[in-house]
Length: 423
Ligand SMILES: *Cc1c(COP(=O)(O)O)cnc(C)c1O
Image 1: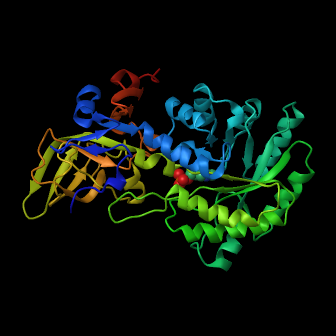
Image 2: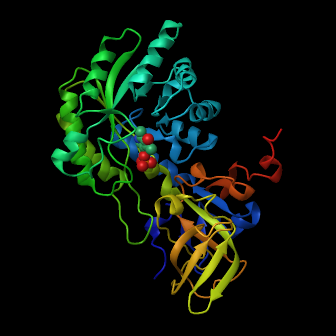
Image 3: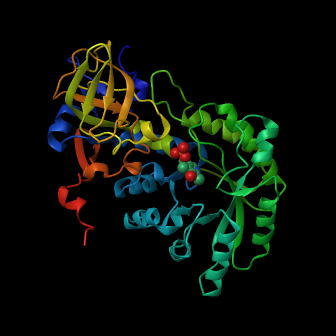
């Protein structure tokens, strides 16, 4: 394997003549020395570039960043600054975003099982709209109205399964989902009917989540057409073509750019009734390739005739995606980023699980040794946010880098943090 391609690295990544990787003008070795490892390094310019690419395509307040991909105060403020709205799926995410100072009206509330308390919180904070997911949730919103809460704007989440099968472009199983109202069995129309008659709720639109980590632009075109047809048969002003633009994690993957994806969706939306508004919900495509994770090698174990295990100082607690989804990643030595990766090793973490594997068969440069740094690119989405404290391993720090400066936006957890909730 040759070097990791530039397209998997953050926008401002550069490699000096001696092979040292810098991001945001900061040499990664320096970042590791200053902040320790494991370390999430986010390129702030990259985050802003992707956000503004999406906003340029769809307009301010039309792009709703799915915060579950990566959320901390600095990210919430950055997204808000760049004209993104923020999708929160729990009371906790709403709390974090409000705590960061983002106004409630820039938030959209999602979730398949919102509690009465979460819904009350969302209504009190004046979220832009709530995406209603079940008849039970409609009951809860009507209850809240009877106890004096104001009337929320809502969109209805729809699983357009039957149309998906008709168009033969998304795998089966769309009807069989915990999310949304089923179109084929009539639930979606029953929900729309009930909401449009309710005085407690202001129905403003319909929503669908097209897919997750989708790579082929034409899938968006077909799925969007289905929703556009349904939308045109209804009398509501808003349509959300939510979610799903994939990103490339490895050298052999490619994904559409945000601009290419936007052009497909805009093409599909070109037949919308006049006066309608389209929202989109990118999550990972804003943040995934903005970050790398820096690790330090702790052991290198050659098992003659079997394989080499390289253990780093993190693992499934900072990146659970390989264990959860079997996702692939690349890894390289950021101090010799120009080195061809001519050897193969299994990259494992420090957790007490044989399954704690970051990369099953990684291409690595020759002679990786204890104390070396290793970097996995494209770890900006669903790494920190899905991370855990398994084995009481403190969570890594997160730094944003820009113009030669790094700032800690989430500090590293301490041992004291690990026992903070004990009573
Ligand atoms: C998670 C989610 C997204 C974002 O998905 P990505 O794959 O991260 O782009 C968008 N919309 C909804 C409703 C989601 O739950």
